[in-house]
Image (cartoon, rainbow, N blue to C red; front, side, top):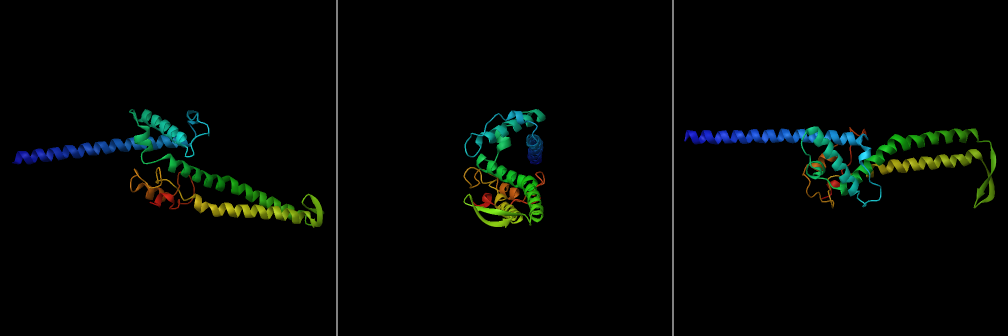
Length: 222
């Protein structure tokens, strides 16, 4: 009886150790995949993406190209094969990760480049509006001379247009921050871990430096 119990405990200990070792191996592989993905994101392997823009609407070719490159880099660092689908793509689909990447990219480039450029243009137009407030000119409508106005008044219209464009861009941001990630192929989240979409929702965009958490979007509509 005691020998039987000892054998049972021994087998349980071996099983626990095997599970621990498997988890440690999985964590090492996950770390290598993450490191490889960041390398790709930083543009260090751009030459490994020979595809043109003419693809399916979901960008499947680009998605799998990324998975293959990341898997190869992670495998080289790990010293053992890493599978592009099983280990890298996992619970993702080109139908959710590509639109999500486009949304995040649009937010970043709008915040970092487009809005600052428009603010600068608006400021310059404001300066010209004041500088030219006494310059009289003939207004034009339908390519014909109309009534007089100042050049400053005309430029004020341009400045206002820029302001309206900036307001529209800012108002679109909440919808851009609603990411499809986690919805997988058809938006139901099938084949994804139950906690995958909520964890995506809780990201604070630290790596991307968004400065804002992504909104709960299509990935939550299941």
